Image (tube, rainbow, N blue to C red):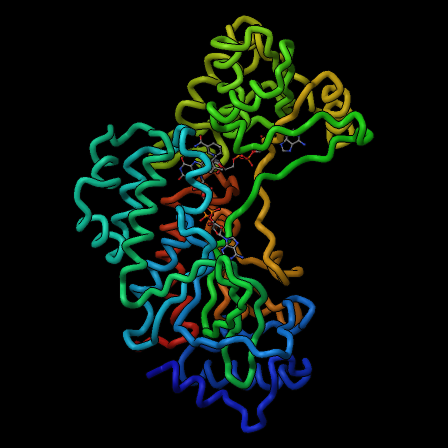
Length: 464
Ligand SMILES: Cc1cc2nc3c(=O)[nH]c(=O)nc-3n(C[C@H](O)[C@H](O)[C@H](O)COP(=O)(O)OP(=O)(O)OC[C@H]3O[C@@H](n4cnc5c(N)ncnc54)[C@H](O)[C@@H]3O)c2cc1C
Ligand SMILES: NC(=O)c1ccc[n+]([C@@H]2O[C@H](COP(=O)([O-])OP(=O)(O)OC[C@H]3O[C@@H](n4cnc5c(N)ncnc54)[C@H](OP(=O)(O)O)[C@@H]3O)[C@@H](O)[C@H]2O)c1
């Protein structure tokens, strides 16, 4: 078995602990690199090594935690994590062992949080995701009268509420958990440490509702840990900062209605910062609530430009496929918000645009001034990678083409540590030369299908 062979070749007769001095680890890792290169993996630019600095990763303390060795560890169970587990099942050597899969909930990542939000991708692409690889295809084909059938019954080229996609993900996630080769571990992962003598990574895992900590070891760790809403700093003293409506609350009409009802104010002004999908969906929600239930609700919309950006189908490809508005948000924006439309549209009776153009200083001043007129603010300004305990600077070195991370000292890709999903998306250059990052179910799957064979080959070799 390949895995055993690697461990045997790389083991050092001297038993060195996890916190081995860097110099020793360098020697070992170079040797590891050469050995792996010679016997299993391509040498040269593709020869990957462990990280060279300890500060990058949290060190493991000396007290013992239960240890468990697996073929691969996947962290996160959103659409990217589900895709990563499925792709690893297809490509890991038959006898490599289990895939350990860690997530605090196993409830489709963040998707249920947006269940009433209309998708901005066609129904067909959710089904394409489920059918793209054998393990997921088998689960979706075996299930009857379920989430997959519900998606199949919808018009395939149209969008749908995201609850359909979330239900499908849960079905796939539960199906993967029933495979003998997958071990689902409910809890949080933290820390990553290279154990040079054993030639594997160590990841800590804290089971949900338990103070116990466990240690998982594996030559492959895949991060699909997702992202959380970003905020901007509003340049006002604490006492003048308006309260923030959380992005997930504002995206869901029912939750937003509840939030406004609790305020018990008749004249209420909400500030919305941003001009992409989240912001437009939130403006739609606020306008509908103003028209239906809160006639004195007003919105100040902080946007960098009056013109909005749309995804535009071309001959065989889509211009601004990842950054342009699509679906219902695009339809609504074109009709009601874009450019001069706001001056005459029904939406314009509720929404006033605040000009945030002119660079960072002008933007900050416009937001601070405008926020003084608002009773609450929503920050719809994008998403930041979820922090991972002990990550240091390493995530900054993500290679958006190969899914690898780079050792800061050697400039080589680290062996066996990979990323995918909204936190670690693929870089896409369209035929017009625009650079974008691929965020969406189908885009995660397409990326994982391309890179997983290489990820596995780097560690386990070609002839599995
Ligand atoms: C409002 C909104 C609407 C969207 N609509 C669409 C759409 O219509 N179509 C489409 O294709 N895409 C859509 N997307 C884009 C994308 O599909 C989603 O953002 C998706 O949730 C990203 O998947 P992910 O797996 O990368 O991350 P997430 O869904 O965020 O999942 C990450 C998982 O990792 C877990 N995790 C994090 N840290 C740890 C840790 N330390 N240990 C263990 N587990 C951890 C989290 O708990 C979570 O379960 C939308 C995004 C947003 C924000
Ligand atoms: N299903 C749906 O309809 C739906 C809904 C929401 C989100 N999503 C998906 O989720 C992902 C994230 O979307 P998102 O809309 O949350 O984020 P996003 O695409 O990153 O857009 C962030 C927006 O905020 C603006 N912005 C950033 N900082 C600002 C500031 N200081 N002042 C004013 N504007 C500022 C950006 O302007 P610039 O463009 O000028 O940088 C951009 O318009 C995307 O993949 C999207 O497709 C989908």
